[in-house]
Image 1: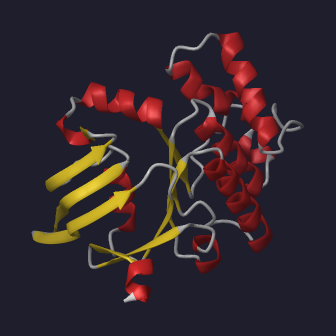
Image 2: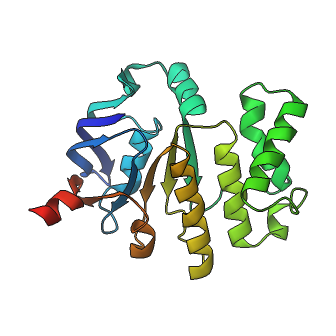
Length: 227
C-alpha cells in the first residue's frame, strides 16, 4: 500500500516559490488502478515522481508497504525502485542504438541476471506485448505504438508490483492508445498496482479510481461525485 501523508513539494523558480504539491494526502491500496488527472501545472508529474522515489518531498511522508520511502538511504531507495516499481513514460526513453530485446534487457542487467536469463525474460515480455517478430529492431525501425510496447515490456522485466505511468498514451493515435490501455489493464489483472497520470478521459476511464489534482491538492474524484 502507498500512503502520502501531508506531502508538500515546493520549488524555487526565478526567486519565487512554486508549490507543486500542497499538503496532499492519498492512499493507494495494493492492486488498485488509479488515474491522476488535473489541469497542466497541477502537480501530476511531481506526484508521480514523489511516489516513485525520484523526488523527495519538501515535507510530509511517502509510505510504501509500511516503509517511509524518503527515510531510506539513496542506495536503499534505488533498490526498492528496482525491485518493486516499474515506470512507463510518454517519451518511451528507449536507448536508440539498442534493439528492442536489448532495451528490455537493461533492467535485468542492472539487477544482476545472467545474459541468458536476460534474453529469455526479454523475449517472454516482448512476446507478451505482441512484438515477438520485432525483437531485433531498433527504436527507429518501430512505430510509436511499438516503441511504447517495448517500453512496457521493459517495465515488466523485473516483475514490479507497482507500475507508474506518466501520460503513457500521450503521443499515440486513438487505436494505439486503446491497445496500450488494454495492456495496462492486463497488468492490473495480474495483481499489479497501476498509478497513471493522464489528461485523456478515455484512458482515465480504464482506471478503478480517479484522483483529481488541483493546485497541488489531491481529491478522490469518486468521493467528490458521491458527495
